[in-house]
Image (tube, rainbow, N blue to C red; front, side, top):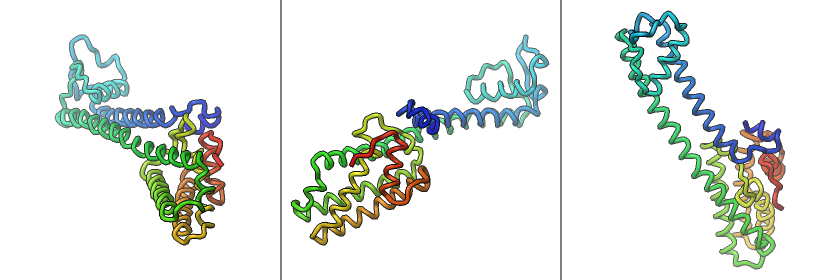
Length: 251
């Protein structure tokens, strides 16, 4: 879905991530239904009783197995087809329980993806704020302790985003429609801030700049390895990241 969106100029925008996750959940449901249908298939029609007016011979065993499976999976309980085989009577409630586990897993997955997205957007806004006031250009005029504290905070947040991409890789495919919230657009400014810090006259600021540089290398290595497969240095990887999300990198 991401490749199709890119091929159309990110026409689907921010809908790609949620749509892909929804498609995965639907695929889980289909696999569950088809898998349990294979359990029921050998026992049809002899292992079931049918309500009056239903002729099992009128339906193919495969279609009937899918019907029984998805009715059970949906916990509809129509009662028109009831298992009489002892093992199948045990299998039916087991299948119904799997749907609750499936729904729990899906809801947990959906709720867990948004905190990492919020952290990413928060970092993008913070970088934008620093870029708007030209923070890198004023670094020499700032108190070294204050400058180091700002750089260290940014380093910690970059490291957190890198961990988020490891634990929640699907978050990469959530594209931001608002450029101010797009880390792909705002991230290049950290390279400028890194260079200004490393060239600073105070050792504390230099060390903070080195820490930021290492965090950026770790983040871009993660992006290159798992998502982009392009770029030889952090600057090129970040540019590829921005291009992949349809953003113009901020200088």
